[in-house]
Image 1 (spheres, rainbow, N blue to C red):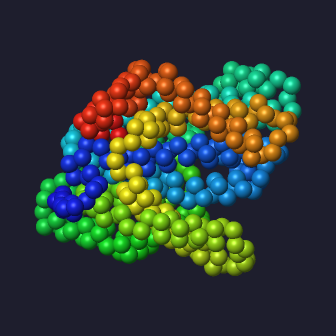
Image 2 (image 1 turned 90 degrees about the horizontal axis):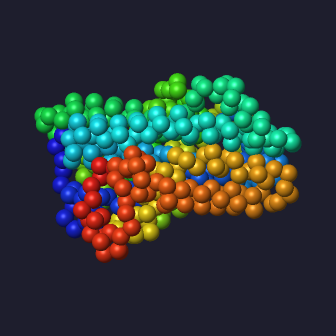
Image 3 (image 1 turned 45 degrees about the vertical axis):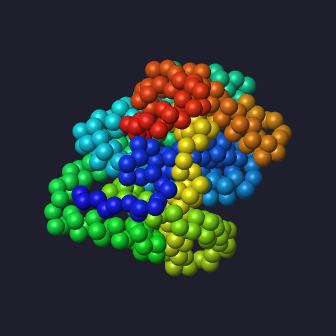
Length: 410
């Protein structure tokens, strides 16, 4: 595909950069927000059924709002950033290298994660569930279920995003191979999307319309989570829409143009989210469509608002933030059994739900970060997940190394 040029005075490193810090940081933050969601969901008023079986009797509606708010943007933003980096690998490293990288960094960690982390998830959920039910020996109940082998269907759990990302990478690769050769059609196609992404309102309206169409197809006011092996077509389509948008942002070299009005977009998105989710709605046939429209509008504003925010505030190297980017993959992979186990330890303890949430979140974060620092960062696990082993270095050495780093691990 033909690539347009970057604006001359952009401070965002896009065309020739080996690291795109704004989107790398954005992707890591969205991944880490999963800890907040999973630490909070046990203390919600809403019953999530089989999707999350743990429910502490000490709960608070504020956690429903927090989860709904984060869910409104987290995975859409993540897949946009992932699509961008998928295209970066395809066009900078080559089609073959891109596939090899995706197999190493996505498919293999996904398979290993399902085989090794899922049993731990089962143990933690059964343990905490038994503890909430007043069992005298929740650990024995958890071990008994593990030994029974009833869990051997290996559900995707929180690793569903890797399942989707692997499929999106293959589909993106196939489409890009079709468009790889320059022709009058590919040139016109690229020019169309370049103009679209450069124009603020055009990209907003286009994303909003496609977002709404996918939600209408899905028959839901919000994006459903597909954590089963069977793929729901509407869920697949809406997340591929975000992935494809990120891919096209790279191929059109328009990332610097997505830096306008971050506060306005995020502020308006937040207001619309609160109106759409906290206001009373009448019982009428048109309500679902109205809610879908609200979701499409504030969801689109969240996507472009966060990209604009990170483009303008986090486009350069930060030692602290870079460490979080390096740790995010491991932390997200391993956090779920921990975040499900800790509430069981507090079962029967009369504490405010906010305190229990803070203990669950901080305890999970500390365990995950310490395990990353001492067990993963300089080990073969770090190499397996990120394609490199990070060593402790002087700040000036680290900055030099970062300026030379590649995105093979992204």
